[in-house]
Image (tube, rainbow, N blue to C red):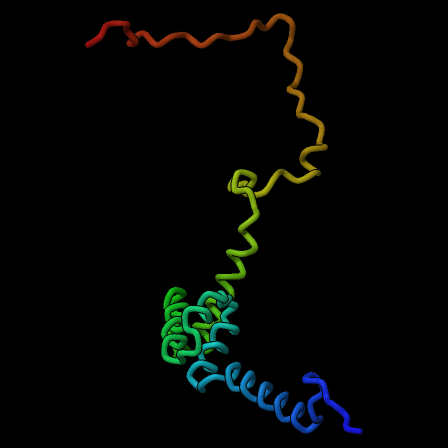
Length: 150
């Protein structure tokens, strides 16, 4: 009596070899070249997201992927040889823009600070009472004012 193996019942060694080959190819695709790895780390440090369409358009072409990643860096004013200070500056600028994205600009007051609470609660200054005999003084109109159009 012979046992028939179903197609899904492969030998364990064959399954393991197939799985290892798949893992190795995925790891090789993820790691890429050292140039790609450098560009990805710069983008990550600068908090610049890499859209998935870049990987789709490159489709395994390392040179095209490097060109696309360099274009992303150039859009933010960076290059592959940018120093840490420039990368940090871009990261701060992007985070600030992200924070200010949802703020309504109408509500920002440019006049400075409000009056303090102590001045708001202070009683108003009442002028000294005028004697009843004194009439309010109206300023006299200057005599040199005339209504003519010269």
